[in-house]
Length: 58
Image (cartoon, rainbow, N blue to C red; front, side, top):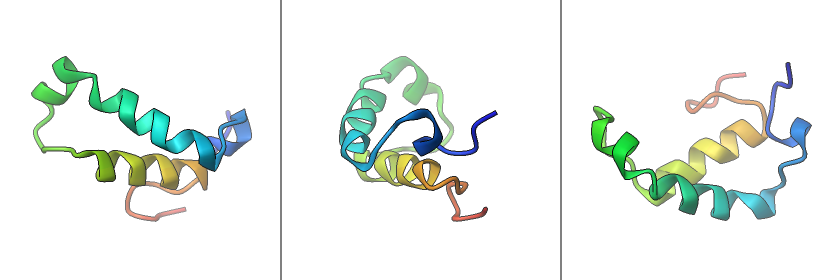
């Protein structure tokens, strides 16, 4: 299983679009126990691009 988004062909230039599309998932975000904004979503994708967890864990 790939360990990062870059391993499956996702690049830095794709992160904004991914975060924008994630913010459109209102049904899922509405049921999430924590609020999530665009910047946080993009940061999650940036961590996944590098193969790190949301807290920067390897």
